[in-house]
Length: 268
Image (tube, rainbow, N blue to C red; front, top):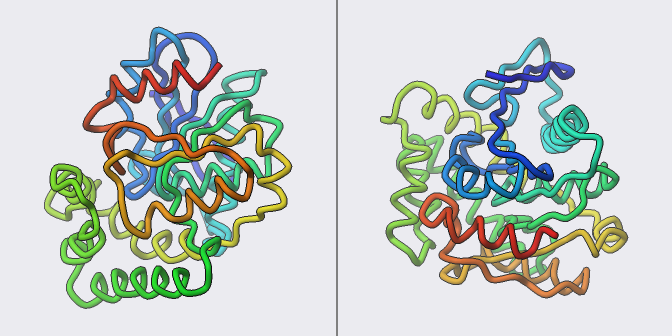
């Protein structure tokens, strides 16, 4: 399996197809394998790269980590992968907390990104004060539930706002502690080091406006609730129409062919 040594980690990644580079950045449990279906569906038009973000699954850590800068490090890792695999700019699809990584990548390394679909980033600091407070309270409730009752109880709270029960079940299975050691380790890493930090990260809107032409904000047609609100705010701020894509928050696992069609239509 291909890997890339970077400062403090070895990044595991997989490559599908040929064509312009398309990097997929996952949320929640951090595994690149959640994109295998859409990678295969898009492989006749793109070189699709699926990677385990550092600390997840096969992307191993080496030595001390600056955990307070995990978000910036994820963005730098994305830049390193793109530069390692291509001399050209890449297309990027980032979802959930992976969409926050994508926004940070655009702020720190815009020169490596041609265009990016930013799907439902829970970037709650961009919200008005009242909604920001509600969102922060919900995140802390999830974390407190995790500490008191464990990850399975917490993920049920996390998915309680999903309008699609099939999506909620898939999301729960991705972080369920009874799915084996890899998933258990991923879920603990996410609850401890990502859930609160990424959702409370400051998004540099001036930097976003400077690269507005690269940003395609996106929400799922069946998505609802606080999780979709930051996408609308970001779209308004950078004056970009919000793209509606099939299904909801984990549509790439339910309808990979339709998302591949979105890539073909919007990544030109």
